[in-house]
Image (cartoon, rainbow, N blue to C red):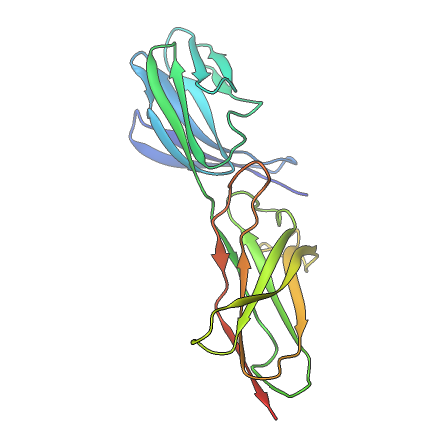
Length: 233
């Protein structure tokens, strides 16, 4: 899977947010840069989406030590150098990860759920009784997957006959990687799901993406727009 380097740099000393894009070299890193200064890390609290990682840049003239409270990471950053927790600091899952600099300054990394979307389409909204219809759609993760398509995931398909009834799950299908014609939009393919249905009466369908890795939450829950199918007898 192809990746590109995309670095989002947070430099509190100048109070701006800059985005640096590096050429593709086979891997991807989303990094929030944090300045180490004589008065502590700046900013002291950084909020980032899952899939982005903190990198400390030492703007001071002495070495600083970064230690996470959960014991997952401890690094030393020399003057003018960079430091990163190569073994992670909590798996990159949603949560608040506290750390100290030089066992003096308190700081934290707050990870929030990354965005994603799922769509639902079909060739027509009206069919004859007994006719099969192919529902299909695309799953798109955001910061975690570009420019690759991301991991295959289960998609829940729900249905109801009208707004007076609740949606009920009718199937669980997988969004699988499908190659697409090369383009700047989806150069490595897309995660596509599909399901054949044979409704007997008017039915409204939606698709739901709620899968999370075993270790914790990384994505927001996502729903498609409703798709109504009318059945002619």
